[in-house]
Image 1 (spheres, rainbow over the protein chains, first blue to last red):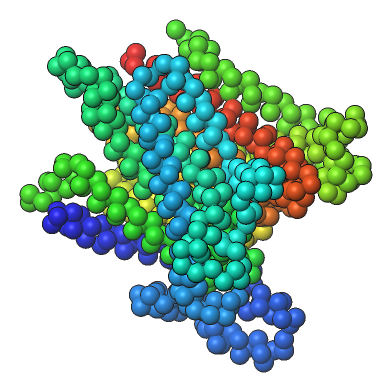
Image 2 (image 1 turned 180 degrees about the horizontal axis):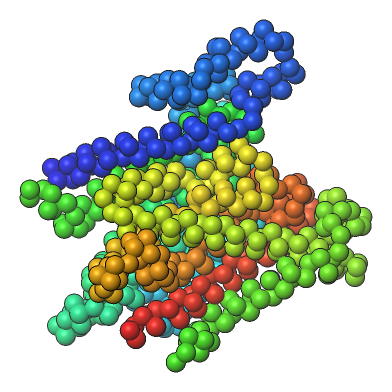
Length: 329
Length: 276
């Protein structure tokens, strides 16, 4: 366990400069915008006099130079303060924390489903590379992987929500239903079935392909021949020797996909009107709320770092070689 | 066996090439097949497909010709997909080659920047980039490339690290070739093939990202794209779902074609490597 903790510690320290690059880069990118949050706010309230504009700029600190504001931003970030959203008129950290759980449910369940079914089907395809079953699964997964998530979401909602009326079209729960406890949880699950399926189907295709490709490589290795020579049953070779070794790159991909999943939440949450993190990003863009967009990007970068640390931990448990050299020294 | 023959023997590659050829032809001939602005009104609104021979796929909510939009949309998808991938691969292989060849502090600094780009969701970055600047075609292309160049950069660096230890590079150094010349003339051309094999995936990803951006209304408003057509159709999803479904099918076929072509190219490259 000590070995894993040391790994995490090293990872955390090395991600600080990377996070700093993200913060500085995003800050100057958003500086390029013509007009600031105050301009956007003035448009939304129908304009204001010069004194009000001056007062607003001062209260948001927008009258300072860019470097001063960057310094203020970074130092308040160190205190976990993400600043104030002009569009929502409340602290950004609270706003993001409120929206994040919905996205984490969505992403978590989609990833779990995609991982389980994707690797299972991948093992099925990779058990006999080149067989008819393998070819069908490979072609099917390729086609599925080419489907844009937002379009799949729309098609699913046309079929299951509009035509068959089995499931709700949008939202995270029935509004003002007064449901509590288990009833409310079931209501949320019903709302999440379509968006989760849309996402899971696409990522399932990715995991299937990766698992299959990994297994196809491993079949050629010597230890598989040795296992065969020992007279092991085919099922045992497939599961214990081939699939097990092909699983590691799939787990790495799980971490690499974290960023693209968070990005994908923007469109899928917009299709199903789920008040989550991704939808907040879209709202920040349409309200021209640069501090909010900045906060969203910084938080998503932190999330990606955390997910990858967890993946490292899993890796350290699964593969005894990882981090062994550092632990020895 | 020549490279071309190897490509022809992979059924994936041939099907992919055929799909993309049809699309490229549609994209090239769009101004001839459907002259004029595809965004103009061509008939009555919400005309059902297959009822009017002049408007075979019907019209949308505003009476615009769906088939014309589809054909012109192929242009936007292919141009943005190819351009974004080109920019991403160019930046990526340049940065990767530089990092791998220079080593030391330069390598360290460049790779931290690559890390930074990798932990920010590419789509969020594209969203921020397009919203800050104006949604024109070059801006959309750059926005997509920003989220896609890290893959080629890492791959190019890894290739360079393995190539720079080979004998012919040592030979070039001994005959006194300038380091920059070695990097560009000896190392880069040899590091490039695996990076190019990756580019089909990048083109496909770029096409999907462009569609998602224009679906959210962040594409160039003066160009028809499949993403914006899907978004347009959402308003009448209950009464005329085909308006969203048809451009989506075009999108899926394009991306499948790109993947298949990529597999064919990869098969072509990998067999050559195995012979060597």
